[in-house]
Image 1 (cartoon, rainbow, N blue to C red):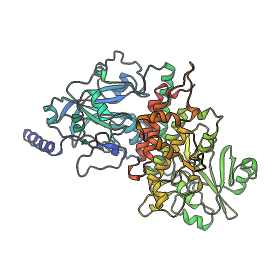
Image 2: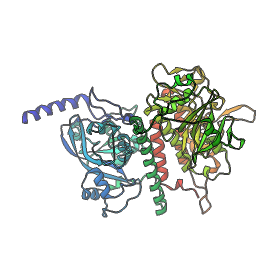
Image 3: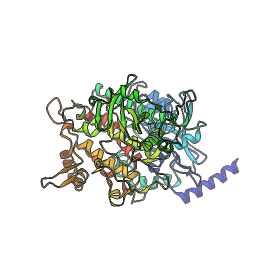
Image 4: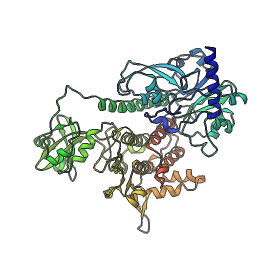
Length: 615
């Protein structure tokens, strides 16, 4: 045993010499299909690169609904509640702490195989949880879906309430070079939207060089860090409670506001888990108890959907006629779209002609909360009728143009709508099999439910990202897409997932400004909203002042005392996100995972501050 240990120490020593410090994961942790066959990957955990097989370490965790007391958090992390309370200077183990309050979690970090980890267990609370949501929302990035899948026997599509998971938490031990310069501990720190290496180094009183080196940064990329990912902070002494903060709170909120923020945050997290979990459940289970109804459609449509397992309802034309009151003008929503009621359920009936095969084929593959639901079809007189779920608040474009609605006047609704659209695109780009580009994202094709939840519709131009299906496009987008088209599409017809990202950036600008995407200046020339905003952001020094000019006046709420509540900082963060989606070069645009994580952080910060509570 001593000989084995000696050999292991030699191997580790030479590994340290050749590989140096830990490598920053970046957004690779958002991908659940990574592998580490060629060596340890930061998309899993931190590599065993120290001579120490075990050491005390620290994690940073932020309070959230269900995990907001010393007792509940210590159980989640399998750490001693007395030690947790001591290091955070908390005397009441059962006291409910403020939302998004940072806590220092002391753990024992051990090298197991390739990686360091602190071990805990987690009982899955619902059938809708996934490895992705558990890693990124419950544990806030302190573990990864890749490491969860490796450490548990359950298939990623077979998770159920009550199952007990082994959860390896991200931690590490100092290397020889770090201990030589006085670092005795490593803190796994959760990055926020506003963080930079410089700010983190100042906060924890560690040099920028030591912090960058500990995470494998060079001087060229030390600020390329992302929310929902972690950094290692080398510390000479145990971290102090004075180093923690409560995110999003510049001053104390009333109990009422804290309660509202807690409920809103909980609802958003649970809903996203429900969406992802329900999709995975539907994709991997066939309901053998339901009888599949065969299609009665023209042969050309049947050929277009022959490879799809159909379980849509086939309606009789008489049913649709009765549902829409004979397709009356009173029920007409547009040229070929009618509202109606089928067995008490409100629906939309769309006449598609005989060219519905593509939309049916695509929508039949999808099942996601933020994509429009297709209930069934009907063939009559050489035409095809599609039956969709009914969206009470119509399209986003019309909703934004309604100057009288109180619902349009809150940041809460607008950020949530933006996040819904981003999550719909995230599903299309990353979770659908195969992945798809929507290709026609605009505010006319984003529909709103009675609860103002957004769903992407109109998939007639969507295309698969599979090899051979991408590249140049011969299909031109309709007139509604003017102002949303990415430069590469206008110039050469090139379509990729970044085409959708560009269009999303424009939609986000609509939500911030309430302005039209294409307008006319005093000379009668067309002006694009995206170009206007980008021009305003060129001068970073005065960006906030110019953003205040861009904000939709309906969002400039007044406090009961009479002064206008300053939303400049919130709007600036959203505008910067939009501009990052509008980069002329596709490779420089954000990916949809980065958009979702950034928007969730903005939403979370906003919910825990009074910027979201308009009066």
